[in-house]
Amino acid sequence: VRMRLTGDAVAETSAPFYVIAWTTTPWTLPGNLALCVGQDIDYAMVEDLESGDFYLVAEARVEAYYKNPESYRIVRRMKGRDAVGWTYEPLFPYYRDHPNSFRIVSDDFVTTEEGTGIVHMAPAYGEDDYRVCRREAIELVDYLDEECAFTGDIPEYAGSFCKDADKEIIRALKDEEK
Image (cartoon, rainbow, N blue to C red; front, side, top):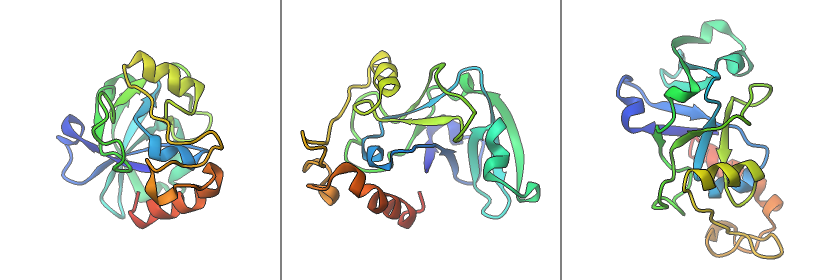
């Protein structure tokens, strides 16, 4: 999933600049409150030569997303620590005013073995998410009831079992080009 960067992160680009984040649990995306990088991981700012957009992804994972080396160019290399504090637009509007949220943080659990080297954080639904977000003073939001169904906090999926909403969430994000 891609999330558009804002603020200082976009100062050096003339085109949109996105983070490519990875998740195996789309139902947690409405509760995304942060993104996590590895402080000492090497990241690349990649220009997509077809769209002209820029993307941040772990350098070790670039070829997993760009099979054709002629479809991109690396514009800048940096460590994860350099992206800490960057801000981004929320994927969904539900918690857009949540304090201390929608920024990049770092932690040692992030790897480049799979995904993008950038992990989406929903602190109510993952051990590392909870630990890191608590450390960063990002309070959790819990939009599932005791049956693991969406509550009215997320009206589009209210009453749906969390895993049953995965395909609809993915479709909604694709429709919005996220």
